Length: 560
Ligand SMILES: [Zn+2]
Ligand SMILES: [Zn+2]
Image (tube, rainbow, N blue to C red):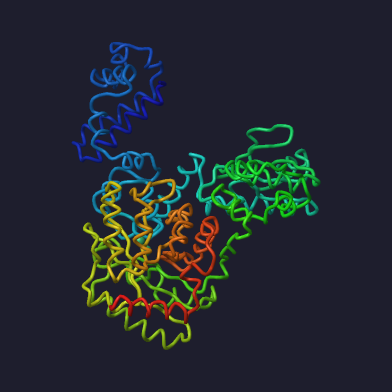
């Protein structure tokens, strides 16, 4: 352990003490010790207590702590504070721009305990309302978190996408006659990206020269005969593979496949031939073409053999956006702005507003008077925007016992209700499953929102028995949400087929808190395609008259 590392730990311990409002003299002492250790002219790890105390500014207790730290990796004060602090709060201390004072507010007032939740709260514009935070701080924190995630080498698809496109488009422009294509997990549109693979028909020497000429900074970290690996400005990793044109389709085919997909193809006992297109290669195996997103080793090879690959949903199949927020609760844009964006920018037929319900105080959940006020505005807007329609919805909190948030009298007047869990996440599988099923059995629940509350790369979400939850949705005609926020993508695509096979409809919901958030439906479509969803099983691919009829019929059947 070098002096720098020791100094860092002392500083960290001082911050922890401050976090607990420990007497300022003691926490300042830690900070001073940290500073002194950093400036020591000799190696602390090779010194004794006596040698250390000879240096001005280092007292006996500091010296003892240093020795203990070197010998055991910790010391008493540090242990004490580490033990009582949640892991996520400890992580926050390492985020640039977040000191103990701000973390106190985040932890105690906003009740946020993980970095992932904090990132989500930034994206939902929730920090600005807290004491000592402004829009600028919120933005800085968001950037710092994204940066630290990136340092771990993993990126949300949505974050990798722009970067990947910059490099691909640059190479395509630089070599207009060449083939440059995405491959691997990025081409399969996986929700988390560790590596952007590109195939290029241009030899690598020329690629290297082209890379030197861009304004974007790429660092080559590894190169072999036919591949180079590089990192981009935000730490995203790329691998460019040189493939001569005559083997391009074959290599694209081989490198796009997940290991499981390839395994399933090998089990067919037919040789994979290097033909001219991917279609021909599949045909050579006696198979229908399989879209890249599906090449994950689930049922796709079987479907392909049986010629029943679903017609995968596309963004243009979507006719409306359900589950969105506005300035009534914690959104950035007004109800009218959100609706107009759907109508004019996205060419949709309808918009579902689902502001937070009254229990979600942190998100300005709506008391009944506010709900009534919103309904009046919706009626007026529906006259103004017709035939475009705004549906009256609510994102009702699922309370601890699984019940919903308003009285039946109010619940019955919504066109639809999205029921979601937003608090008390610490549940075992049985408790979480029961809580969800109680909500699913509630006749007012139309859609189950983000079923596990996971935040990708940040929070695992509570464990659920997927089959039981999906079966309950089937039994109660409840629609399952595919929350399209790139941090959520929840219901996980690996469960889409099970839901579809049980006759459960899925809904690609943006959960937008601002107009641009509506575009997130694109990411929902990506994972829905991975799950094998076609438009006919997707609620918001219903036309306005179809979904209107669906809501009305459902209410009649439930007698609500
Ligand atoms: Zn929610
Ligand atoms: Zn929401």
